Length: 330
Image (cartoon, rainbow, N blue to C red; front, top):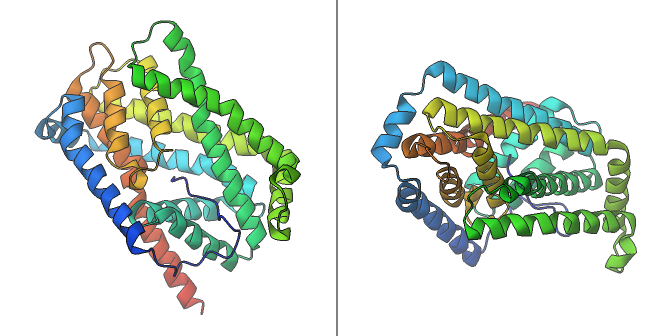
């Protein structure tokens, strides 16, 4: 599931809008930088050559792979609790369709986040939802995802105080996230409760704010439960991926690495965090005393192949099926 930006002006998103040359250049640079980081830096940071990593991944039993895929799917299914809470009337099946198709588009296209929003907007409109409802849905789902990622460093702080070895840079990132969490939460709460602090707002913006505030008041438990279950199952997926590849990483270090991976996905410097997330994840995992570099590298790549790579073909197939069904329906 990929975080996507909320519609800036709350106008009807248009999937036909083309990215300008500069934005396409930025996207190409992001792909190049991410690929270079993955190919060149990943083996250096993890301490594992690509040949050994590939051999380890190929040796993972089929049943173990199926179990990992089931965990991945279970996490996405759990997250539909948040999506359906943010858009009353949305079914879990359609929420899963929105999640996978939006992620597939966001992970591969230039300006993929905007394209994913446009696609999801079109789908919800075909299902009878209003533009205001979709804008509120986008705002709430993004807000809850960001808050969940900023909450994770709070769990790591006790480990840092107990002497968990962490590089200075990562320690600063975790500290910044802990400081940012209450600021983001308070700011969001104030904006939802007292929109006048933003100055004059258009009528449509005010409707979205009012709808979002009302949904938070009645559905915050479902919003939070869905994100909490999704995050927990992602952590379990990372732990299981390392277990089947023989990474030998203790849970406290896995938690630290998972925290770093979740924060890295907020940066958005490369499409889907390609390259940067894998390098950061492996770099945090190899901090564990006695960790096997090859097992760590293979486990990190397996985890990313499921949470990032698998969404592309699965979401693409679902999008093709949805498009065909819409054309068949006339």
